[in-house]
Every structure is written in structure tokens, then in C-alpha cells.
Image (cartoon, rainbow, N blue to C red; front, side, top):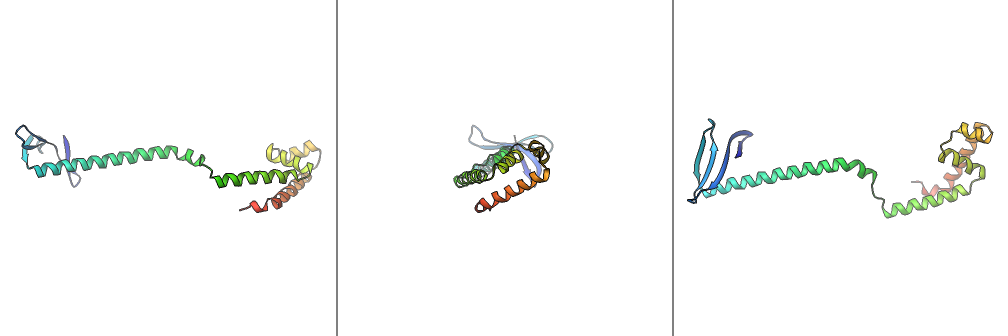
Length: 159
């Protein structure tokens, strides 16, 4: 049976059908839970069927919306992390990497070695100083100088 609502209140459940005599019948339970059968016009039958279809479309639309939302909510973090890189961004990244390699190669051997240890091998200033047998401030000063040189050479890539 189909539920019939009026202003948010359940009035009754009903079924609409056409009997063997081609009469349109609405069957429902009244407030006392008694089954009632009423002959209705074809216009009312079509209105009830139309309303039934409309509600079904709305339920389906709502269900699709919920399903769609759940899919995207679950995939949103991965979609943010896996955002495709545009051709322009990929080209700019390659250009920047090439320029960075060239800039690092133009540094002195001491500065290259310290950049490698500090940034790529995650060594601390103290560890680098112990490896090279020098003062921590000497390592810090040479790293600062190397970074300044790299910034000057890569100035055109800054946003």
C-alpha cells in the first residue's frame, strides 16, 4: 500500500487499480483501520498515479544525491592528493628542476656537499660539523651563502 500524507501527517495507505469492469478503484484503510474501497474517476486515478511517480522520482533523485555525495566524500582526500598536473605546470617543474641542478652544480664543492648532507640526507648542522671536523657556525655560514647563491640564480622562478 502507498502512504498518503497531508501537511506531513499520515492520513492513510492506499492502492489504485482498475478492476475487471474497467472501474477505477482506490483501496485504503481508514482511521479505524477498516479497509475501504471507493470508485474514483479516471482523472483522480491519473492524479494519484502522477503523484506516485513524482514522489518516486524525488526519492530516486535524493538517493542518487546521497550516493553521489558518499562517493565523492570518500574519494575527496585522494582526489585532492592525486590532482592531475597541467601540461604547463609539468613543463614549469621540469624547467625549475633543470635550473636547480645547474645552480647547485655551479656552487663550490664544499657548498654542494653541505647542501646534499643537510637537505637531501637530513643531517643536522652538528652532524655535518662532526663529519667535516669543523665548527657548527662554519657549516651554517656556508649553507646560508649557498642558499643565497641559489636564490639569486633561481630568482626568475619565484612567484
